[in-house]
Image (cartoon, rainbow, N blue to C red):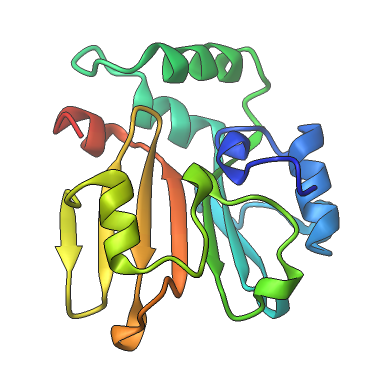
Length: 177
């Protein structure tokens, strides 16, 4: 699993080999990932390893991204084309949240070569000034062509305490983020 960057797993279907490998590594039973009635997404986690995954429905993705007033990157456009060829019952990975509490257990590479030993200064030097910052909760946010990145430095920690990558939705794209 170490060779796969988690960023590459966003927008992949639950049936994808990379998702299966991640779930196996995290000891999460794939057959238990189902939507509850009247829900469009579901969360699964391995608390011991500090990882939370969010899966969402085909309809949520198509509704969130396929709009005439939205311009999307070629990379994201290609992913959507692949998504639209899948059955409507398919679930997709849209968010990955990782904490550094059990960093020794982490078996995959982080997005953008991030490392939990990085400081706020390191992260800002890497990405520039964040699009949004919330000092109260110690979070900084950046937007890329296909995803959003949130890095947290809780309790004035000198280094990263958690990070989240998630696919862009229509609100981000409409704002040009």
